[in-house]
Length: 294
Image (cartoon, rainbow, N blue to C red; front, side):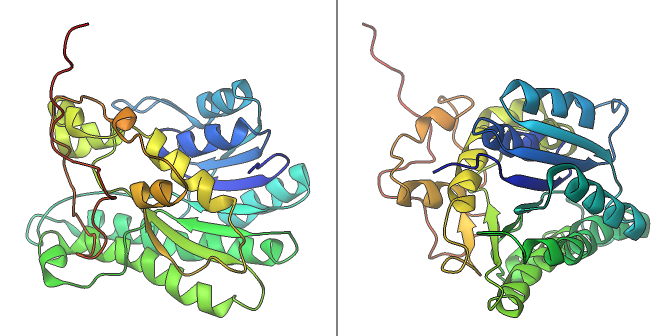
């Protein structure tokens, strides 16, 4: 498997999972366009498109940082065209940009609701629409959406309907576009983590520093995305995928290496995941026993 010479257009990749996927591809010598808003450091979150670009270059890839708000049609189309002019085309699209607010209906103000739906659902549709004409002209084109399986059970929507419905909007793009562009050979798939993933955004918005200890690292999502991007696009499309299941099928057996703190139970486990997509054989989400002294 190799992504050498491939060009990835990535939204929201200045930090976290998106950056990890970009760095993983860069180790092969991939080109990575980072289309995100963060040109200046956030007061709470580390990283900008420029620090991300340096990390990608340091890993062996070629980076193109682009200031881009995925809510803005003109900026998205301009970013896509700049990527094509710089690298000669687009092979892979990673719809990673998202906004999160795990609040109930009465606690969710409409500005936050609009932000989640405009970035997460509309942004995925818009960026896909802008990239598809270029993906049609490349070998093995993939679109990967960072969304959960399309599971409409009330127990998930009932927790925080605004955020969950925005994420399910991404999932509907996966299912619908996989069918719409099947004849063009463009793969559309979704990838979702089984557990919490240790990112600064999650620490700040969801779990806090203590909650991060019950997470897996961003590397598990990066490794899973790498496997997906190397699959035959005409044969592998319309799938809703869980990170550890992707890697288990690819031959990985050591999932403990992805734990932030082995002495903690892994959080999440079934969040937005159907009952028939349980952990791989032999993989536990419980804390690990302490290692015997040597």
